[in-house]
Length: 87
Image 1: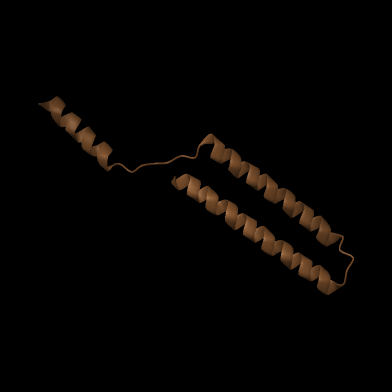
Image 2: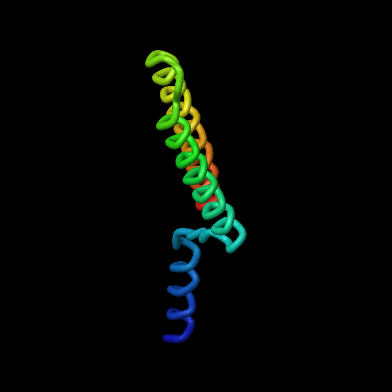
């Protein structure tokens, strides 16, 4: 009788346990690749901004455009990472 109760308790526990989805190796690789790509893009943008030879307004516009693009890339990458963690 005790064995059947233990088996029943384990079955119920497994049934109600939360599912934990871990990132696969491929998804972790994608996240790392995206981070390296963002860092490289950021470095290139900073060099372009530092060597800007246009007017102050043109340089400021380029700087804002770079920040917006970096933000979009970050949001896109992080949303796919969150999706992969949930899947």
